[in-house]
Length: 290
Image (cartoon, rainbow, N blue to C red; front, side, top):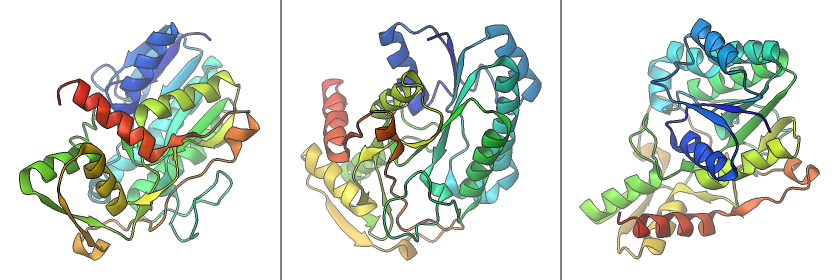
């Protein structure tokens, strides 16, 4: 596999993907936001033309859901127009573009986990901007992979959100001894190291098109929080509440869990169950003295 350019290399997924590529001996160019702003279209085109990657992974995104409601122009610039530019650049270079998308392109009304061919119907500005990015990519760059995922957490943490849900729960549990978590929104929690491995497996298998890559199974945010404290050995009171307890501008899907049909078409197995991945993540924190 030729050189890989990783956009958003400073984030949870980007850093874990670069770690994986280093271990696999795959030449790659880590490009964090400070190195390359995906909204600077001409700069992106120049840099990628200089690097001549065979694969470009776009892990850059504006994914703070509430702020996307407040700054829809920024959301569209990062999550849609930047993807359009990348699609045009990669088509010109003959490079494969791997783009990270989200479960929030769905409205959560299906009543079961979404598969790759389900129609999108986003509820909020973030979801609309990500769905638009998918549209541009499919229309403009034949050599592409869209990876939809859900509920990411990783050791680097999210710079936009100031950590991740696991770290937030551990901090609040330690500080307060009790937390309030919603029961009426469900997801597929996904460890970014597992996602990086799954993503790269699709690339190596020659996959093209849209894939759902998440840790297997799904749960409510409340169940996720209970699992975090249980596996961490912390006695924290978790209060179940509905979404009305946390009023916000953004509407959120009730059940946006994902399931993959297309991984099996490549002969690839689903990622391990989400509880197993969470236990591994927490053990890694403890080993690192956190």
